[in-house]
Length: 562
Ligand code: ARG
Image (tube, rainbow, N blue to C red; front, side):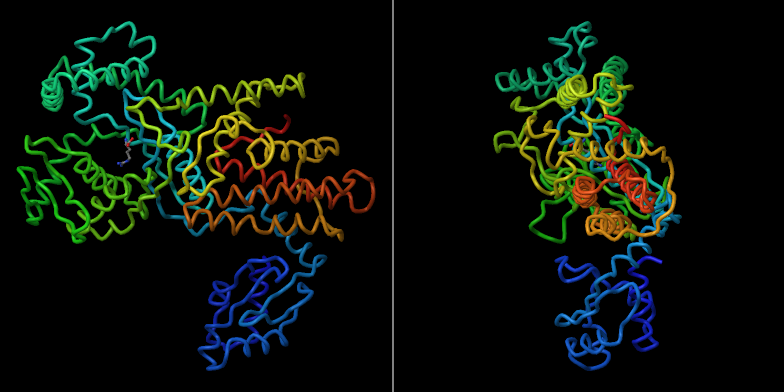
């Protein structure tokens, strides 16, 4: 039994029978400060029921609760705090890890439910930005957490492949483009053309009109224009797929904006039926309840549809196709208003399920404190960052472990892991200052630090010839107890990280686990051929397994040797 349940069980015997063990379990907390104890039970709710002061209840309960698993039970204000007995609780914790084995850290509360994630979603003919990196890795982390909790996931890459910008690009290509050049380096070349369009349009405003017309032709299915657009798209997707394979991210669907081109009439009809459309300066809009929000633009004066129209069509489609329990949009916080609008429009249409759509925003990568913008050229190319990280990891291997097998794979895991962890350890809403140097530091609170810790544990296991969990008779030293306490927190950390859509919670936990393990390792002779050796190895095995599973959930590989 895990220790929270054990605590709930002991509490149950001392409170009114109307309180179930579930009720009690849901109230138990982990104290903010370790010196307060390992678990805490707040007495506010009980106090209401008993019509007594919470402090008095806590005093009373503390006197009555006893278990061989607890070394101390004490009241602290309105809380009953419990300190574990390291020997008894330690054995209980490790036994539970042994018993769950590969399932340790996983949950089943999500089983039978589906989470749809809208993630990555770069725009074709434009560079894959650091913002798209954030969406990809945060989205992938959240999806892995959902799966660890039992959910089915559907990862959708809602490619930005529709909109007036493609009209502009087509005009630019026809005027100044070179097919060979595009083939050689599609994204960079198309992006250069796109930028040139904007420069020229500043001097010759009539270009804008040409762009709009070209997009109209595309919407109407003009053959030549469609052929160009398709080609741009194929080339771009190919380039994006190189990045996804480096990152190890896969998608269940690539249905982007263009896929919904023929599915928007339905949205407009529904809105008309419910009389939700208003005309504002020639455009069709839906007004928001909250007057401070701009109205949601559905159709432009010339009849062209918009980003929001496509997102509305996409949400209807996804609800039908996947009947999701939750739909998460992992998109930068600058699109907060957009998602508020889309959700409100769906609610106005009477769709209850719109409540289960959530925008999961994240902050920006800044360069010298400023937003990186594709237009102004302050843009960092993700692929270059990844390649650089991988080559640094290679150099490191050459220096430290020149005979390493699978050196290429390890360098990839480490280089990519460095970039990913640098992002995922931050609360997603924070802005991150882009610094290659910090990203590629293989010490301190980094991905490579966790990977080294894991590899170190694996190397002990290799020396001892241990390849699976064995037995645990108990360990008495303080350092091992610190590790065991961290191991205990893995399942609840996974749950909390999922419930907050916050891979950073897991990332920070893994750092704590690694720290506790490294100080254990530094103070203990693990291979000492005594009666406790098997228990120590079991601990090492458990740490290795939690580190590798945890990193895996963050989308980071954990090589066995580095
Ligand atoms: N392609 C968009 C961009 O790069 C992001 C799309 C986000 N997803 C959505 N369903 N709107 O800004």
